[in-house]
Length: 150
Image (tube, rainbow, N blue to C red; front, top):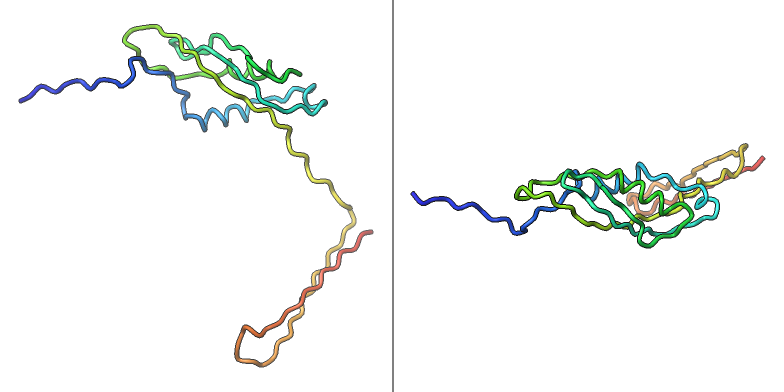
């Protein structure tokens, strides 16, 4: 019997992985992002670029906004990144610190549609002109929609 060889990893060091992948990370950001009040008042939108470091235990030990939009958005992006937790596989008994980057987008929430009127009536009337014809393609219908504002 031939000895089986150990398969070698294609990477020397295995990188930390966010549990659930990129989709789960986006959901986490969406769920925990608190839009800063000053940015809301001034209607500021944009992207914050954050560099961060992940230790051998999967914790973010350092985070810094490299380019941002100010108005409290940079601080909020750093706060979010510091909440991340990664799964780090064993790396040949080494304690490795990984450098990573992320872009966090700040988009203003969509405004709710305005109500037109509170006393609104809808009348929907259908009439059809049916003739005793054997082919159904010759049917004609007309619709009348009446909207009354009080």
